[in-house]
Length: 439
View 1 (cartoon, rainbow, N blue to C red):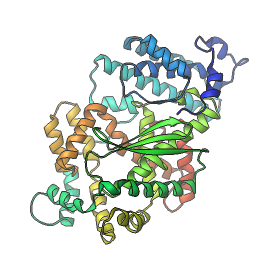
View 2 (view 1 turned 60 degrees about the vertical axis):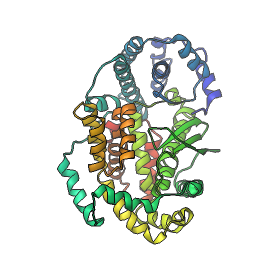
View 3 (view 1 turned 90 degrees about the horizontal axis):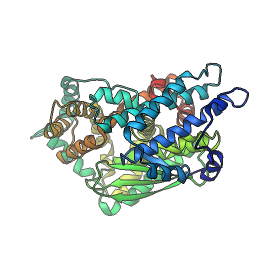
View 4 (view 1 turned 30 degrees about the vertical axis):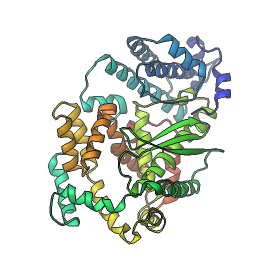
């Protein structure tokens, strides 16, 4: 998110002290301009909170002086919280009812992002929230609740697909060993998946000039992959190789982290909202905020956008399996099993809810993930570490995906109308939509 740094610096230079009363005057400012001081305050508060929490600022490409001032000022958490609530109160008093829809969306976006920021500050101060209270305050949704019986129905089908002796998780692990990408072939497989995901995305979305990303392979992380957006249409995508990487992850990560996922989402926000509209709030990405549900949900839905139905199986069978040195005749059977396991995804939310609400401990959470989400013990322990670090963030992947899919399809973007599907998807990625706007 380093794009538009020069133009943005000119736009906001000398605006540290803002006369809001003047900007709110209809004679001297448009409704969109009236929101600019609030947008600047929001960015500065995110940067201030980032001085207390290394995970808060996922990306920033605004004026370097703002970040330097946040570092030197070291604003206390209580001050950040109070200032956020003050901005929210002022935003609520603005009457934008007759103005364009995007401006109203912008105001609502700022209010919800500030509420999440204030909540995160309170949490860092020691406030305890339940899993559902936290997800609602930070991500604007509450995940549905499922009991064990719900997942057992899926597991009974999986039992039939993986017959044999021993526990189901053991049979599943043995089955998946056939589909591990050898480490010396990882880059070739990922490069092919990225190139294809980009090609498919560019058929439907006009990407900013010079957009691109690089891939790095890392270890010692609680996540499997991460997109670090740098601005000017550039990202660094890191892939964690601590655990075995299965062949299906190449398409997952190429689309989720890259095209049409996080990389495209950030690039479109930068291009259309920051550069074209001058909306400075899109020079920063606060991780613990409603924006993340849109980001993760659209990235996960973006996988099936780029590789719908059998097209994914065919591409993996014909291109990725051979590159990985795997038997392409096994691609169909592999995906049949994966489709069943995907139906267990909400078990991860249930593990997080029980664990963070203190009803089970870390060992029990890992066991839950093994029994009901088909996560091998090493991946289950890694997911618990993720819960320790990112807490209720886990809902953004599956709840977000389902919300985005329903929203796109409710606007005519059904699978049988792919062009409309892509059109609505691009609109979503280029707007300040909130999760509550999608319901």
